[in-house]
Image (cartoon, rainbow over all chains, first blue to last red):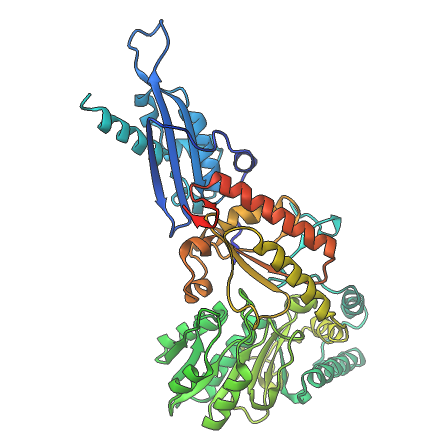
Length: 139
Length: 387
């Protein structure tokens, strides 16, 4: 039975032409969220490197590259794509602050029924960053 | 928003609804503007409407091998199914047990739930991996107080044909009413009504207008109305008759369908789809209505696939949770024991007349979109192995 889910143009555009889609070789961090039984599973992979900017002496780590793979509906794919755009180039601390709501807002709007189940990309990003921080805590 | 299917689209969702036949539209239109009488009126326009109504009733009765008095016109499949179960329940209050199957349409399952709340005991018989009810399972469940057994003729999702004549015969022997929801099979597969007491039919699945259908009620069946009023339809369904719809339903039965041709093209599409790695057919391949294809593609999600095909002008449907308003995956596919990853990647194609060129285009586009979605997906299906 098909539900009538109306997506806006921006969502459909990201769905049809997803940004930063695919795999990263030797990622510095990755995380997978979702559950096959819900129909949505997404994986975020990160390259993390010190910010190469002489004007900012803190030399903090930034997300220098990000890729995603998603199995899910159009909302899941579009929100993964949008998340990668929002996160790329951000410091880890800035990136951690991105919420699922930020992603939905950046897409204009998502059908209400899709907000909770298919909009998981920010969770995946936060989990990936946490994984990175944990594995580098002892260095 | 609407993309006219005549501007190059390919509509493969005929189990959802169908395009009304041009001849039917022509025939029906005069019943809106010229012969628009109320069949209950006593004047000439009313009498003429009554005459046309009864003519249509006789034609439909003849088509299914019944008597005109056994046809009760309704608003469609859902109402027919409600009337069958609730109407029997009202007229036979001493019997409190119902048997049906887990793969029935929601209008049977929800009606059963309502009756359960009224104190009825309902047995939901399961299906095998092939999506078919075992008549013996039904037989074992029959009790002294069984009111009715209701099993659909053809499943609306996977197109599997149920052994309804066999079940009807068992019910006849046991003295239990047998009802079948024949909405998906009507005009496509003949049914012998000998042991069938009630049968639901809908117009819009067979190129007649929406909002019309009928319930066949075998003579002598004890049944009450659930819609009361002016006493139309021998008191079984009050409300002014939908004469344009009824005329359209009778008219469409004159049309011949080239079933063999549709089946041949259906098989061609199935062969094409099975060449895509990680593709499975859901439900029996042989015991299936000739215009249904139901497949699953590993590692992708059906709503995405449906939307991508829609942007190519190809209209299909899916059993994925993401495409349902309740975000629940198809209970029919679940009943078959299909793994979740395959349920979410399911696609239903229900054909009408289609050319070989269109069929090949559809296969090519599905293959292309499945591959694109697999590229996006973290679940890979490579060299016959799932990763």
